[in-house]
Length: 287
Image (cartoon, rainbow, N blue to C red; front, side, top):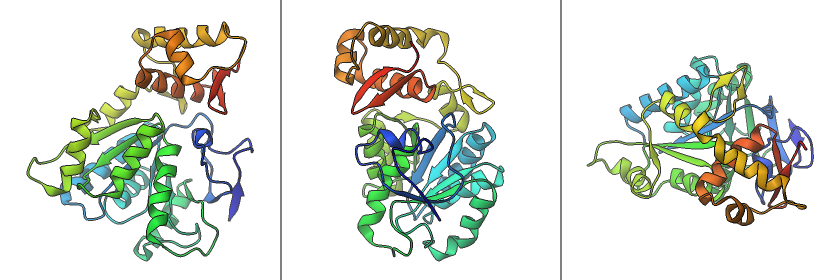
C-alpha cells in the first residue's frame, strides 16, 4: 500500500484540480502518467444484459485505443467496465469506497487482482482497513469523475449513484456522455434525464473518442482538430497577454468562449502541459 499527496509530482493531474482532492490518496498498483487519457464508466448495480454488454464493449474499445478506464468496482456496470478493460489487456483504475486493501464486494476480489496484474490500480481516500459505509461510496464518486477527462453513464435509474458521479463531472467541467436505453425502462430514467439536460448521446467507444477529439498516438493526447484550434489559440493568447494568471470567468470574458467550451479546452490544454492551474487560476507553462 502506498500514498501520494496533491503536492507530489506524480499525483494524478486532473484529480489535483479538485478543491477537495484526496490527501493522502492511498493506492495499490501503478499511477497514471500525466499524458494518459482516463475515461470513467459508471451505472447501476442492478444492470440488465444490454447495459452490461455496452459497458464491456465500450471499456474494451477505449482500452484498445490506449485510454484507462475508471470505475468503482461495484457489481453491475462498474464490474462489467473493469472486465471489458481487462479482457482487452488494458489498464483500469478501481476507486473504492472502502480502504484500498478492503475489496468490496468480496465477489470482485479476483477482478481486483486481474486489474493489478494488467498494470492498473486500486485507489481510495480511506485508510487501510476502513470498512464499507454508505456515505463513503457517494464521496468516492467525485474521485471517479475527477480522475477522468470524461464520464460515461450506462443504465442509471432515477435514483442512482451514477447520477451523483455525473453531477460531479459537470461541476468539475468534464465531458458527460450517456448511453441511451429503452424508453419504458425504469433503469434508464436517470440516463434519459441527463440526455434531456444536454448530455451527449453515445453508443460506442469510437463515438466517445471522436467527440473528445482525442487522437491516440503513443498514449498522448494530440491537439484538437483543426476547426477547434481557434479556441485554443484564443485561450493561449489571453494568457500570454495577461500579467497574472486568469480565472475561468476572466478567460471567458477575454476570449468570448462559452463556459462549457472553455472548460473543455482548458482541460485539454492542461493535459497537454501547455497551461497549468493553481488556486483556480490559469497560466502558460511555456513562454
